[in-house]
Amino acid sequence: MSGLNLSHVTKQFGNFTAVNDVSLSVPDGTFVCLLGPSGCGKTTLMRMIAGLDLPTGGSIELGGADITTVPTHRRELGMVFQSLALFPHLTVGENIAYSLRIRGTPKDAQKKRVDELLAMIHLPGFADRSVAKLSGGQRQRVAIARALAISPKLFLLDEPLSALDAKLREAMQVELRQLQQRLGITTIVVTHDQREAMTMADTVVVMNGGEIRQAAAPVDIYRRPADSFVADFIGQTNLLPVEADSAGRASVLGEVVEGIALPAGTAKGLLSVRPEDVQLTAPGHGAIAGTVTFIRDLGGAIETFMEAGGAQVIAVSAPRNRPDVSVGQSVGIRLDPATSVVLAR
Amino acid sequence: MRREPPQRLADYGPLFFPAGMLTVFFVVPFATMIAVSFFQREQGGFYTAAFVFDNYARFLSLFFGKVLGFSLFLAVAVAVACVVIGIPFTYLLSRSPRKIQIVWLVALLSILSLSEVMIGFAWSTLFSRTAGITNLFVWLGLMVQPQALTPSFGAVMTAMTYQAFPYTVLVLYPALVRLDPTLTEAARTLGASPVKAFFTVVVPALRNTILATLIMVFIFALGSYLLPQLLGRPQHWTLSVLITDQAIYQSNMPFAAAMAVFLVLVSLALVGLALYAGQQRQAK
Ligand SMILES: Nc1ncnc2c1ncn2[C@@H]1O[C@H](COP(=O)(O)OP(=O)(O)OP(=O)(O)O)[C@@H](O)[C@H]1O
Ligand SMILES: [Mg+2]
Figure 1 (cartoon, rainbow over the protein chains, first blue to last red):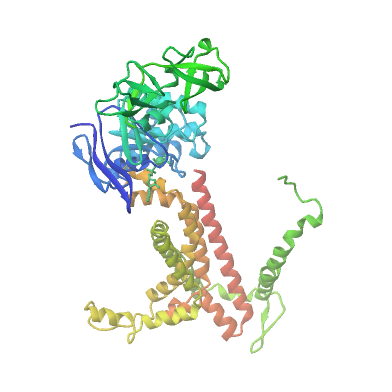
Figure 2: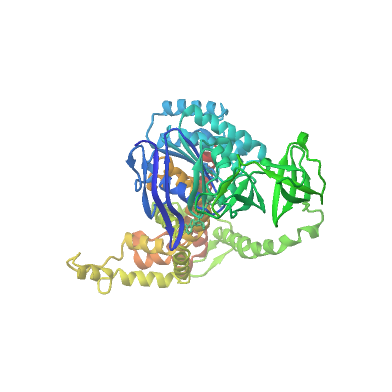
């Protein structure tokens, strides 16, 4: 089978398990984002894919061959480090040509490829510059070009954009995604910025505590989170307790909500409702009773915080749908069953 | 913080102490030595103040030329040996667990507390026929008969390298610890084997530190006068040995001073050349 396949990959440092039984299939040409809170094992997983750390269990396959113990330098991959790790003693051109020089590529072919890559990263004519004299964004691009010089089978980036300011980061996200689509190269990016993951990825892999919680397309991750961790980690959500009443209907905060069903055999769960799917109405008529506690006007969106049955509920609305409520007012809360997801408690 | 150039004499205050130390312990003795090097030697006595070039003229002979050449060669050889062994050693040391690093550094520092005399006698025992390491080789079956390894050039080199090695490690260590470990990892992902990564990334990235270490060990080795006498044959004696001989045993201070001045000038010239060469490559 082609592509990248991880099966039951595990990494232990002493008796601490940094990556626990991770299995993942990445088809050729896919853009994958590893997303998760700090310390969840993203870097460790990526280092094992690169061969910089050896797994303590499981195997890694690339293009049909088992590469679990193949040394890094024979894996034909490109990697961009968080620190970029540009060689300070080499010029921009020499940095980019490093992998070609190591492989004994003729000088003129090296030069041709360097010029090609410099054009690709929009830095033509920079070959003779010293890397110390580049801006952050330029260094970033040079690191990317260096990793792509041999047209690797696999392109790995560990938090490549975290050192850039917000504006440049957004621009680079788009640029990186376009570049990946043009080259059709299998790419794995580690990030803990979920916006970044949503912008770039074909597949978002959400990790926590060394395990994969969900691997799916960005929209699915957002719309159909697999568990409460994913629902809470990706975007904003209301996680409300849902219980089955005596008649078997789902009740949320004391009101029966039509159209929501608990999985067969369970009496309790958590309902994940995105704030934009929460509607405010007049109290009564089967709506959940709540009280407005705080209103935040962010300009582009208005967030209404409410207290209902001991839980906090947040609603987000666009300015032109501004709810006509004020702090302390009693309101009715309606949840959209079509976009709500019942998760295990 | 605002910085402005010193205005009044008192602003130079902090500089007085180091300047004073430098004058008392370096400028004055060195100036005295230069002066003495032009003095006239009194046969059977000491010297009288004069301004003659005799001492330098005597020095310009094939014999002293050879000794100078050998001294410089030995110092360069020791410097190169120290750096060649020191870089991989310190690199591995800087990548090993903290505990191991501390043990090694303490061991190396304790070598510094040994005097040149002790190092010399220790090695001459180790290299002797009766009590030396060759007995161990015989016992291991590597040699047929124990053998004296001293006096020889190898013995001089070994002891001098041993003596200068701690300094080498102490100069290289901070630079290697500070070197970003992801640089070698990046090189490996780009297709370089660990050994190739070491030579194409670690060594070139540390070029200035390596140059500084070479110069330091070179100068350190140039001043060594006990080890060549203890472990070498007369043809392995360095200019420093001859200077000691002239100054202490022959009581020929002016000639010793002239040789010392000459040695300082030659080594300064070599150091300048090395720095210049280093800068040329940097500018490229
Ligand atoms: N060499 C090591 N020895 C012991 N523990 C380690 C080692 N490397 C990583 N760990 C531990 O493994 C866990 C996962 O680390 P990792 O660097 O993979 O996290 P991460 O997801 O990349 O986090 P971040 O977003 O902060 O970079 C952490 O708890 C870390 O302390
Ligand atoms: Mg990390």
